[in-house]
Image 1 (cartoon, rainbow, N blue to C red):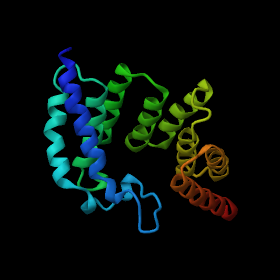
Image 2 (image 1 turned 60 degrees about the horizontal axis):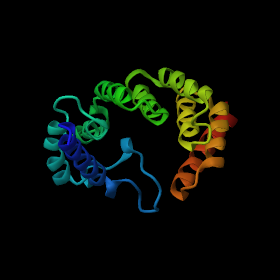
Image 3 (image 1 turned 135 degrees about the horizontal axis):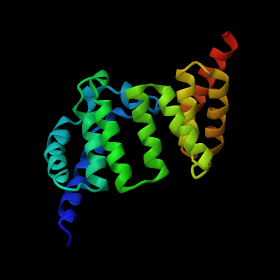
Length: 194
């Protein structure tokens, strides 16, 4: 067994605890998705978070692997008492480290979301458009949803609507579909006003 293996087990356990700790806050009473930034953090399981954080620190010791880095990213979200307290620069740094270990297009897309929060939607849109040109995520609804969100944030509502429509063509999950439909209606309404 490699020296990294026990730390990766700690990382995986921490990751599972951290993701599960937010389960109750992920949807509203109507079953609609609640984005991380809009979640009621008092509904998070803070005992699970407290259990996970030392595991994250353990997993990050010397040459961390995929699970350790993913857990560290989740920990940064869970450590923030309010959305505006989130250390987005640290999350971007962790995604850059994760990319060196696992350079998948999905990791790059997730890094783009963090870049949007740390540097602004224009910087993220550059990454997303590069991924779109490369084509590996052409049939991945979250690429189009992320692109739509960045376009919405910069006020390009017509282009955002096209990307939301493409995401809707590809999405299979009903809750995600409801969320994307709501966002599409919002940008269409904003586009009609301007």
